[in-house]
Image (tube, rainbow, N blue to C red; front, side, top):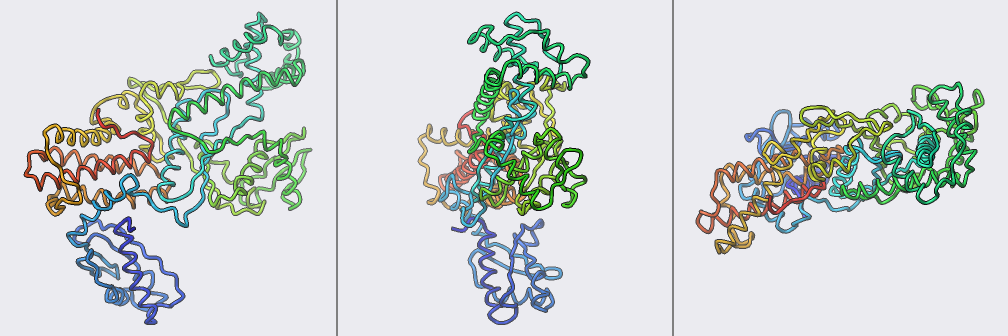
Length: 584
């Protein structure tokens, strides 16, 4: 089934190109890519293609001459009223007047699937996003990456790709040890020990909650001497003192007892993260443990493979990856002097494993502060014999939150932040998702909480949802009046001949191509922009018309168009994970 006018035109022109190949005008073995774009000016038709310009050289002909030959080879098509040639060889296509109504049949036939591409021959893509350290609740800073990642996965799925969502759980390394030790210190304080929590430990109330739960289960079973801990930190600066404290706690508690605090912290926070994201409409196919890379030997295997290829050398007791050989600005340590792998070593193993799982494309969504990390990861993939183009890194700027015109500050370590859950409770998941999706991911974003909560046309989410609810109300009113409404396919679409109707039909027709374009450029915000445009066109039409007061035939045609707009609004909102309410 043809989904867009471009599809029909590509098929029509492909037949002409095939004929010209058969006639020897175009080399038979030359691959031809035919692209159509909407024209900006009405006098240039509805669509234009530069195929004659791209084929001129292999055909050995003037582009305009070749354009004449292509047009002459076109079959008659009822959807096309005129084809002409402009400039150096552009071909402009004018659609027949009746062709613009075809979109309504497409919408009604496909319903909730209108705009979605068939998954034939598409890519298998993994989108990894959020992947925040499980050291505390998700906050509004994580929200933008969460919504962008999920919306992008939805857009790619709508474009016909097979998409898997993955969360990389950073459950190994120093930050987790700081977290576990912070919980133990709060536990010891509850047990009556005067052990201060360092300022560079985790301070939030959630630490206190976990410690209280452990104390209720184990009383003072795991209390240690404050003096022994203090002596371990004597004379050291902040970070070194914290490391010494962690080491001392681990040694004195013993591995089994220390793991009790470690697992409590990890399991509690990870469960909270999963619940938080699910409440935000985000569910993952895989939760991938960093620790599993150690346990399975995949880190060591990757390091050994890089050693064997000559891409690792020893310097100062550490092992270094020759990332400069692959375009990075400097070489990188993969194993420290003490024999412990670095975070980078984990990332090498993880990304190698990711691509090895059969994905055509792996998309990482990282905070903008990670922009310098991409070259070294791609370098490691190249060294391991993997096509680094299979990894796409997309960056997200954190949103700046405002309430009452004042900026809301945040600090994860100090525990001073607004959680993602608090944001959802304050403005709702729909508003949060819509507002987060309004900008390109790499653009700065100011998030106005007051605007997001407002029930006014200035609130873009409310404006779009209200368009859907308004249409639902139109049909409710029609039923209350006892009006008999024909099925859309039984109405006379040609009665939709005004400027407002033409604008809406054109917007509906754009939807499938917009999805493909949004997927191609990894820009789910295009869907949000489109919905605002469609809602604007509908509200403008509604305010100029009195649908239910018209004669039966024009009324039914208007209601058919209303029904199509409602369907596309619902489909578009669904792609960005926002509800389409029937009433507001």
